[in-house]
Amino acid sequence: MADKMADRVKEVAVEEAEKIRDMTVAAAKSAAYLYPLRGMAYYVSHRSLWKPLTAKLVPSLALGLGVTTFMFVFTYVPQAAIMAFTQGPLAAASAALLVLSESSTLFTVLSKSFLIQDALVDTFDGVLVSKNTTNLVASGRQIKAGGDPMAKLGKLVKQPFERFTPKALIRYVMYLPLNFIPVLGTIMFVILQGRKAGPVAHTRYFQLKEWNKNQRQKHVEENQAAYTSFGIAAVLLELVPIASIFFAFTNTVGAALWAADIENGDVNEHGTSPRLREQAKKAE
Image 1 (tube, rainbow, N blue to C red):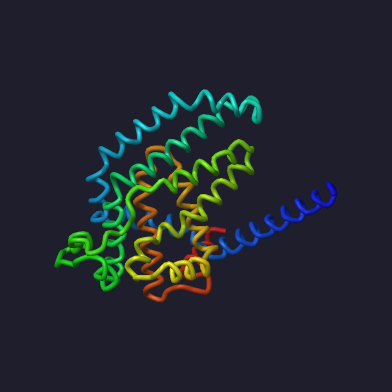
Image 2 (spheres, rainbow, N blue to C red):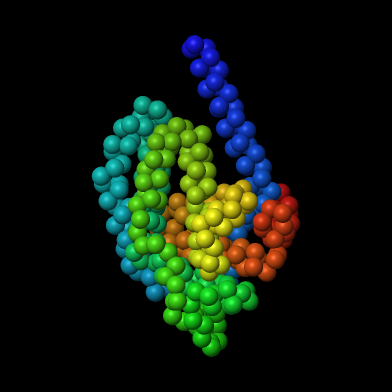
């Protein structure tokens, strides 16, 4: 009986490993992980997109500093003590990195829910307007005459996101123990977070398209590898303490650029722009 159970566990483990391998290959082929990088370049080169961030910069930095200080004061020592049993002399450094990751995630959840939500929506819509998909944006807000994309954004017709929900935080806490497993656990943690973060990045796009739950789910399932690829890259960037506020905006820009490619029909069988694959090949 015990042997059969062990064989079954081994079989399931092999199946899961094969699924992760296939997903990794498909994600790499999609090259969607380059959209957050494109978002950075596009954001830096388009000054009009800076307005929403600059308006929220001071309170966001204050929140980030407060969250990081709180987490180190109250959670560093207990976690370092636990990790000492699994990582030995590396526990101090590993615990510090873990607390920074936790601080960044908590900061991101709080800031997106209470400080920068509307600013991210404005940024997303502004990018769509700049990429000649104004008709799509017009379904969710008024469009004004203006000199730059951000100046054209009028009053919201549809409130885009739900206000604070504990789902992201609960999911993070559920996956957190994976970080106590050296290397492999952290990799699994990032993959699981990225798998959810990818589709979330297109929440505004799905709303502007007026898709129902089934339509959204169908689209995500058809492009799961690409969304996971995007999500992993976005999660890694937003794990950087303090700077995560900047990456939250550049990731939003990257998501909007991807949405514009979809709207303009500039996507391949992987659901992403063919130019991304060309850029990936040049980087190899």
